[in-house]
Image (cartoon, rainbow, N blue to C red; front, side, top):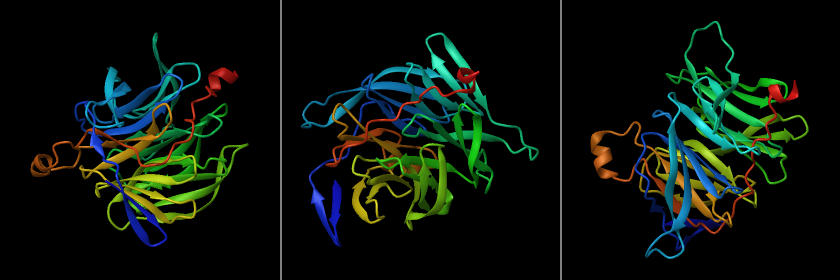
Length: 317
């Protein structure tokens, strides 16, 4: 069920949050819609799996779609995110590398720089800005405080833009590209930056939304500038107006909600990922759909997805 709020009043919206058919994953994350191919991409981080799927008609549940897996492949390492690009290949933030994935195999595009502290790190969440630059964040394998960095990949290479961070997670941009939203999960908040679209530089960081129950994970920004945030540990997706006011709350029947994205031909279906990671056996028995994709139609539409523009150092050389 979706709860909308206007001012201080909450209103129930008759839209179910339904599980989808693909089998549960251990750490299902990073749903992305490719509007050109009309396909959904998502990952299982610790299993190293990338999934490609399509939305199909769901029998007996009105207009809400289901998801059917079209293809799955194993990258042989953790995979924090996968993104479509304009040339048809996929871009994966996998292990310590940014990797291009195409029909002819994998191409290593960028590698995390070595650091003297010997802390083991991996890429986590990633997203593209409105002109197709890749932003990808890192974390240590043990989630050590301040061991991560948010990087930008463009023709100048891999450049740190927010440092330090602990668990680099959700990223999104306002429809006009002038604001960037960002979640470093252990801070318990989503922050907002002014964004220089010409240079790909986030500036003037300040708090946008605070979370007392659960922590912010992945996020997406809709066509009206509302910010939809998956709340890990709370079994919720919360939406905030551009001013930072709570405007919708979606209850998800799985505690560890990891991310969300708008999908479908009209970008009106919100696909939500959840995880089994960090749940006890008793909790898994109580949450049989933990780790699945969920879908709902909350009454908003997403932005046209941002695809990677292949702004790699190799292309510029």
